[in-house]
Image (cartoon, rainbow, N blue to C red; front, side, top):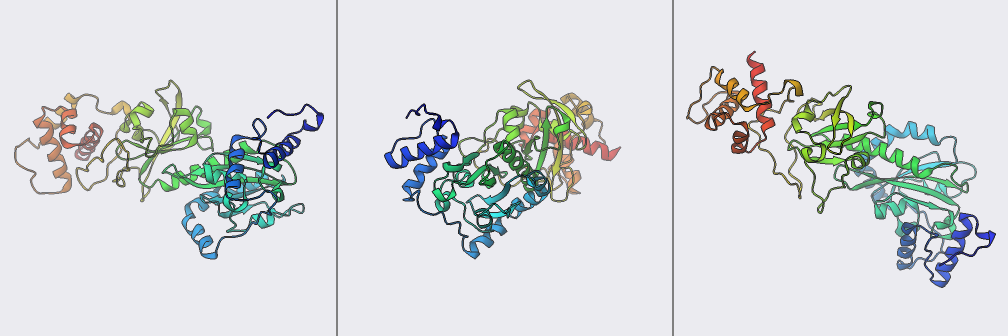
Length: 423
């Protein structure tokens, strides 16, 4: 389809109106005028037997479903509330309102609506209103809920004629499993955007997502990194959650961009720390939780980073992780005892050679023996198991770790802590 050369089609709105007429009346695809996401949404709406001339009904779902949406999405709502003051400050002087839906398109929160020029917004921003594609046709929140991709829908790009005065931009918010947990939308009624709404909504969706990811990470080491330490507390920070097995459990959009990762799932297994970040789990644990240290990435970038352990009691240590996800490349690492894993020492003081470990064990007053673990405390049993296994493998930590089915870092950390307890 080629556009006429008359001046009537100089504006985007005029081109969209012409493309709508050609598509809905004559069946001509609006190639080059409408984005692929909007065109595919139009096609889905037609398959649902919706007609552009019908009036979009911004109706709420049932009371029970609305209450369930609010209850199931409490972490998402808390993340929204934490970011709400900044969002209201940014949008307060504009013509725009913000809406938050759950993953299915049910509205669970909104702000900045109710202006004098608005007709649809007061109706569309009621809690429980169904903004899904099936309910109100092509809108930015509905398309994002359906596709999981950021989308902008302007004016007559909306499927229904009755919604043509709306301009909206939306972006997904993902949880620690990589699933769409919600959608943030910024909309303006009658007044076109006077700024890059797609950039603004992506920024604040990212900020809400960051808060959600950290809040959901109760058993992960959370790594923050960026090319400058000034951005470590901003919405532009790269975030990675690492589990006790050294697997990257989740990562935000900035981290995916910097590290070249993909959202993992059944077809994309979770990467391990060493392949994605070029460092060991012990290296990450030794990063400061306040301030920042430099970290050299495998792609050549030098970033500033810090790490904090998110555990139920708030302490900086690893606790047993949840059951291994399907598709994870490494089986769970068995605990040597019920004690929690302490952080490793800083990189400059970390034991670097197996011979040093052997010297530490040999200097211990406890001699190797071939007897099974004797009684006593979990701590002493833990030490006896490590010492005996190291003795059986001539002090070779790698071989001992393999025999015990754990990582070398775990043995280093445990022996270092035991040595510190004796000093």
